Length: 141
Image: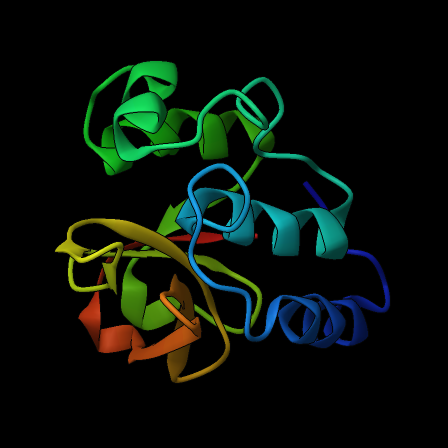
């Protein structure tokens, strides 16, 4: 997976395009939102095979195999060429995972996009910003 030459512009545009979108499984959840940004920045669709196949937490778990989110996405990211890195090494445009994001009235693991010292995750009324220090895993894109 390689970023386009103009990836910073694409990153900002993808984040802005999703601004204010409420959390909704299958349309704007942590996986679809993060994968949408990565698609804009690299042209690689990390949700290929999963997109449009679930509309609830139970549906997402069923489609993705029921394992933890980390266990589910790590092999997919690796196969796409995203190398695991310590969260403290994440930079803008990298994938991150936290266990502190709050969405859909629950707490749990969530994928997000690093934007520097912070990371964005889909929330009830748009992006939720957390410090990268709240992340438990990261991948270099």
